[in-house]
Length: 138
Image (cartoon, rainbow, N blue to C red; front, side, top):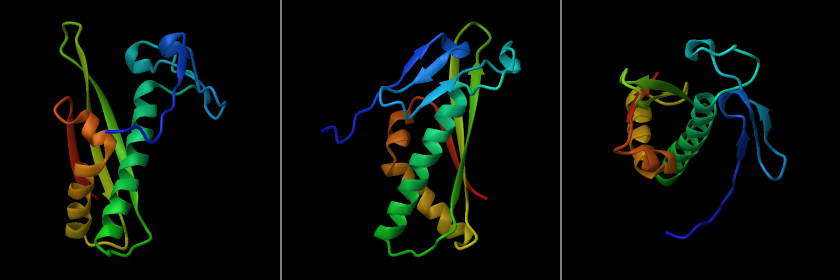
């Protein structure tokens, strides 16, 4: 594969630091959630950032699959629920649940588009075989 877009982000201070991109479009405070022993400050965390990125990419993939199949709709949202997992022995992992919602599509139609999108979404490709990803129309 050939790159069609490349970007970067730099974090300083880890989960209690700051994340930024060279172009300045992202400059955000990071705070560790209280569930992980943090202060639960006003900043975001890596799991929230991953959830937002995956949801945005996956929704675009669903829309692309719909266009390819001449399926027309306007209302669509994707929620990515990211869970940080532990085995209790110091190893960590992730799991993602992708939920789609549309007033314009029947549940079966949305489920089919989500399955198709899961085959083309770059985030789905990156996670396949590495983490559990579940799909569900709402």
